[in-house]
Length: 95
Ligand code: SF4
Ligand code: SF4
Image 1 (tube, rainbow, N blue to C red):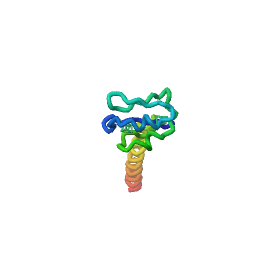
Image 2: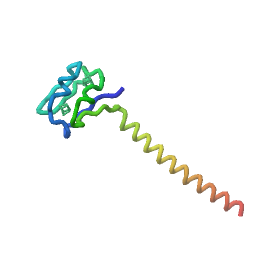
Image 3: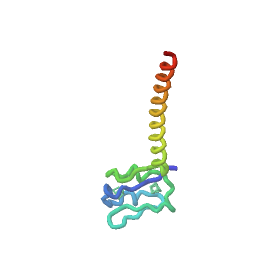
Image 4: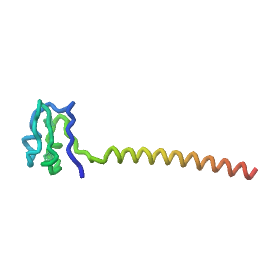
């Protein structure tokens, strides 16, 4: 499931997201948008209304997915090196 996440550095507290949220899940506190995830139904409307790029819809597992991707890339590079070594070893055996 994807969830809206506020970037407090970009949020100016205009309140447009809070006004449009159909579930009243957003509150403006000290000029920043706060999302009550117990109310949020992840409709994504707030993400579309924010003109400041302060709201992003993200997958909560995204860091783990990205980390997995990095690990896979690392493994591919490692396999390539191993294949190359194997190729060289085979050449040496034949000599
Ligand atoms: S619409 Fe964007 S800038 Fe305005 S309060 Fe919501 S998150 Fe902040
Ligand atoms: S995703 Fe929808 S329900 Fe959740 S905070 Fe944004 S507008 Fe409200």
